[in-house]
Image (tube, rainbow, N blue to C red; front, side, top):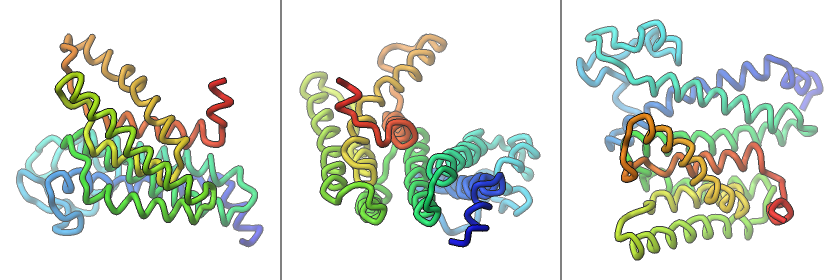
Length: 271
């Protein structure tokens, strides 16, 4: 890679590219969250208001800005547009910036760093979509998880940061740990504590990041869950039977490993 381009990627212009990339893809992730949950195509038809059916104009489809300009309402019928749309777009942009900072700016070989950026962005984007689907539709669909597991395993092999055996073990352990938890929950409580969609989600994390990431995600998720659910229960005076999808907590654990705990020896950390 030319030295001039390498230097340019470490300037604010590089961050601008990463943020813009994340924002644009965040808009597509919103489409996936809405349509996949309804078993619709993410390609056709073009975006339109679900109430009045008017196609959304290009000027009204600018990530984040259009939602703010329209004050969160459809231009045609005034129907309220969920705040989920700008949140996903902004969140995806922030995560793209985090990936750029973590894996590109500080890297010596920027060709490899850019490869990491696009692979990890695809990984994070998949997790965002699955989290959104779980929150909005209580669904982690097989049409995403089944192809994602082998795809991210292959991408993990391409990255060469873990051996193929470690990646395969990560996928297997991710699924198995969750499956065992599900069956124990049925045996002890007679009810579902997690779903098999969560098992496939954890397998995706293991397929790209290895078994260490699976352990972190599995044990960090309950603490994230407590941080989220306890205030909701306290403010809303809900009972302890409050049901919140568990997938986003596993995703939070996976992201914690990717950005914070990656490269740390877990056994050494525990001891």
